[in-house]
Image 1 (cartoon, one colour):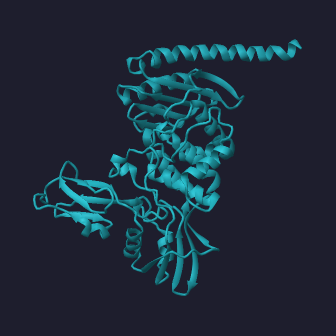
Image 2 (image 1 turned 30 degrees about the vertical axis):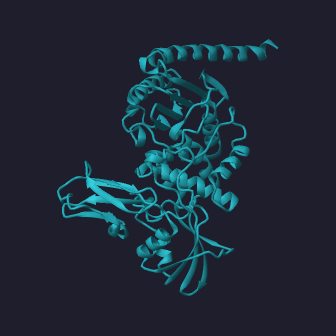
Image 3 (image 1 turned 120 degrees about the vertical axis):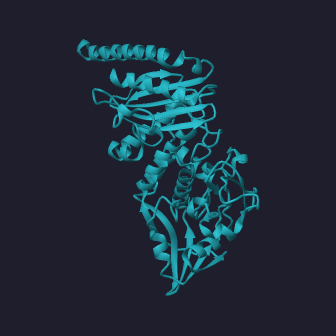
Length: 426
């Protein structure tokens, strides 16, 4: 009996000693700093090799995770969307006519993706019959609706085009819209000259872009993806006759647009809210045959995420909503599933490391040693991911800070200092 118990006692003592050392570091480098004094902070560090807790500080409490929510969306996309993005669903009606339905692909005519396989396919037909979309919930639950014309909050849709954003630029010779379909929707007063920098606003429910003097040369403004707008925009982009129809067609084929991970990598490196929201809608379409963020979230919470320790409040794909509430333990749960199901090689191609993406100003000496997702809202800083230690062990961590009243940069720097010391001592 002693031979069996001693190793476990030794491991328990070693784990306790390690936890105490990390606790001292956390207090010195983070928790006692003025910027953390009135904040709500949770930390969970986990060793997946032996399924052991390395460090725990309020890890069972709920926090607004901001863009750490994208980790939940990313796992679902990796599991259910296969290796390629479904670009459109289609049925050929005759040699010159094709019936199509949007599948939620956020890359269709998106400027990040010059090659457009779906567009090339559709251009082989003279007439395109577009199924009238069922999904029209452009903004998510709990979003800041007064930011509806901000580019980080592009509206969701069943068949997005150009990222559902119009770029308005001061060219020196005039004001240009891209795509140029929106050129006639610009309202430029005579008081704005060709040398002025600009600002742009848009009425809540109209695709009219009002240009005034401002501070920018280029601005991305979301447009309202109304059915009529999307039909006309698709027609203008393809130079084809596009007809909107209410009839439903079954037995679709799929054109795949591009490798899934090429989009997920941008989503996680840039923390792209639009890609995340559309990813969740694509998962919904795959699992249920229709797009409904609430329905797919409930499905995921009752299946893949049923083992989450704290049963989160989850309402969107991007983390824009402050209704999202997760514990650090919940996020580590998802990160462990991601590692177990897909392996670190794939994860390392999707998540940013030190000096890249949203970590571009952090962890420069830890490049290849940390792979993590940031999260930021007013008063919220989050960082969750994987830490490869000096001994080449993998630790999974989640650090969530809510209600701080200081500089987000100061919070991030403190977290960086803490994690570097944890990495070096393991």
